[in-house]
Length: 441
Image 1: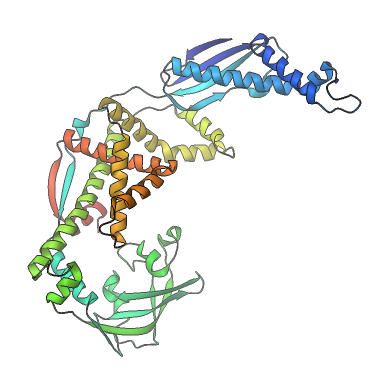
Image 2: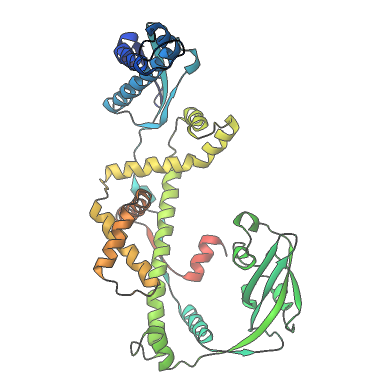
């Protein structure tokens, strides 16, 4: 057997494997002998079928199987020995043209090579790292919401501006029948909100969905329509009013403070605000970190226009799935995944340059924190170490979960590295201003 590599250019190569009959003939002969021992062919006793008949019936298939097995072993070993960094998997050329009766058969595999490049994190120094604060307006609004949540609901006959309204959204054509509890401030469309004023229980209010909310995705929550339907949805929906209530705000007293935070832990409105601010800014910090990670990732993709073996990858995409794709389908799939692949290469380069690795202790510690937070959400504030360890062990026995959690751990390590190496500008903003800068709302 002879294996050679021919570089077409920096991103494409061909691996040629020449296989002669002697490379696999012994294995083929041994398999044919075993077949002869067990073959049931009419007119012959078991074990006495002439070898010529066995070869005629099974020989070609066995030759192909053994040759392919041998080729795959040698190909894998050659790629490892040559330290070839491939994108996708090797593609065999002209499989239908092989003459399996020839003394020597030549197999050619096209391969796509990962590009060589450098990543300089310092070029991202002009990016912005946000520090999101809970301002006084947000804290006051939250106090009002708490008072409303823990207050008393007073039944009403007619809708006024700040009332709670229970009812059902319907649209027969779209199959919408969605019970909902609303207040008029959820609507971006103020004209739609005004239609409710003065209405009574049993009345039907018809409103349009286009521009109804500040974010079209809220149609998923209120109308229970699918994600693919919400963008540019332009229909009328009926809202049948079933109940109208006004909230009598709860008093800001010790009884309410104890309900919120536990007996005696908070004793004033200012302390309530301090707790709200602390909790909110922890969540905001996570959002700001994720935004910084997204911004750095997008910047590095744009700043590193890495050339890929595009023609090879499109060909490979056509063959890699359960069903072969057309050229047009492969072209579309490549366009969707191109930047993702570029970032995988950039991320891999950064991991290699800075020796970022995930140990089992890293993974176990991260998983433990995740489990504790999830248990806290369900009221288990102080679970035993034994219970937590048991859940962690079950989670880490699932390979899909290990892969997902490992990606999250690496994202944390990448974020820490970016914060250290990139001297980004720090900008303090309220959450409202942050949303406006990110989404233009």
